[in-house]
Image 1 (cartoon, one colour):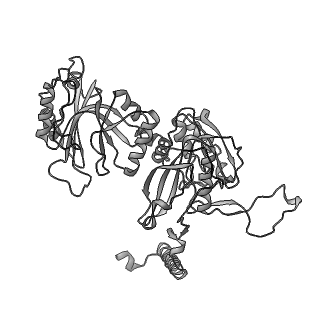
Image 2 (tube, one colour):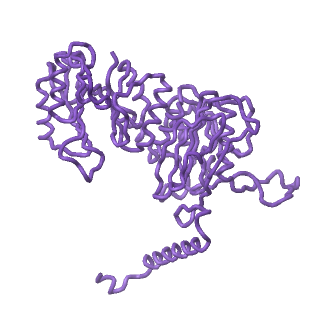
Image 3 (cartoon, helix red, strand yellow):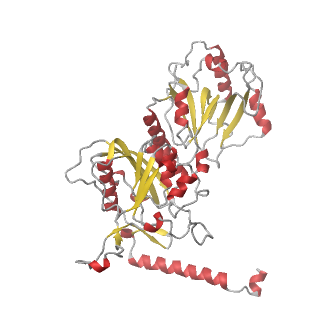
Length: 497
């Protein structure tokens, strides 16, 4: 008999939930049946899996999954919930009883088999009942009253509040709007707690605790999500062509991958850039990507990083990777650069070659993503994935404008809001063919150029020079006004105010 489970997710990065979970179950080759169609307005899924070990494997990877319970009852009202449980005690059919003619997408009238309850009735097993609410708070007295209503359950073991053998969970869901909480819950659930997700990794890998970080170091949670969507597995070799401070290395190495990266920024790779943390004037001598790997006990997974220009590939054709995970620069907080010079017919004398530092020019986004997809199509193993971020202007976004390549299939596309105007999308491509097109390149349509002016992202082809001049004038006027207010001594009149 397949077991029914309630998957409860953290209510953040909602758009990433389905993509992460689908990537995990495809990696682990676990079949999953949906009892109710997933909805972004609800932080839970109701699913069926072949055995409990399956959900433990899924929870060992997911950072968006909060916890999982073996579901015994789900109802719209409290009375209905208790009726279902009382009926379940008598259900000796060894399967869920599903009434005919009911709503196939609502499981509030389904009756679980009695064997689920009997498995927890051993007198030698201690237990407790947790009461949880979503979008509403209960006092201790209210929680105790809720717990006492389950006295009819065949639980013969002793009650133990700390580390019991069995934890039973009662959950009331009041919607997701804290400003409009209903008097009665939308949904109620009861079952046996099975396992928690990997939420603790967010704190373990937090940038606040990390020794070496940069201006654009990837958030720990999103880095782990990227590793999951890339289906990173033990002994995989992953590559980050825009490695920066190596944040994605930490997540990939956590799941057992060997990591390799490159970047054009010599200063960042050698930890010689200006410190990111407030109040720190210089970097420590041991700050480095390798130092971060040592901090998390992943030194054996660290292959190396090299200074290189991604627009000038240096790899052998037969070299392949198991995944490419990267966050390319957008030209906002970090410049988009490649080696080049704008002067025509420029030559360099042999006397200057030894100490020559190559000049750099702007690496336009269309060319960058074209190179990235072409590289992935050439150097990924078949069936493996490229996971990368892509910046967009929200009002102009269309999926058909995203980068594409004949050898790659877009399998996931999730949005993270940056502001009212802008966002970035986490794109996951899977290599579906080893046959490269004759031209060897991807296609780009509608790509936008971003610039950073006065702490505001603007679209270069959507703003006039007059608007830009006015914006700069207002910005520097406000900056000067703030300086005057800070440095001008207070008058007697000001002190009275």
